[in-house]
Image (cartoon, rainbow, N blue to C red; front, side):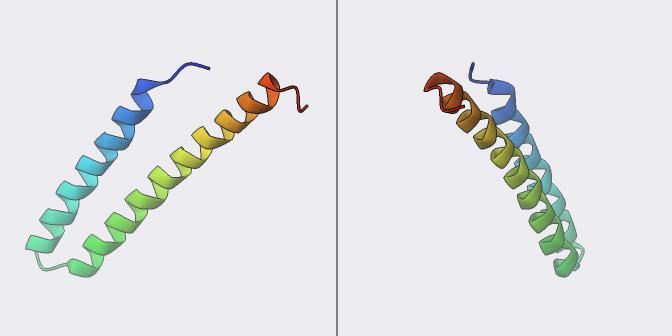
Length: 67
């Protein structure tokens, strides 16, 4: 299993985009929509991290022969 650096950049990119959208919506006075955008961005990143953790645990299982 290799450390995929692109996943870190994807998460950082999502964070930057969500932060920009949140700021723009908050400046427009739509704070409720800004909070929803932040929540959706968090959920997307959470699913990415859960998928990476699943891959990690599968790799650990194959290394220690817990099949």
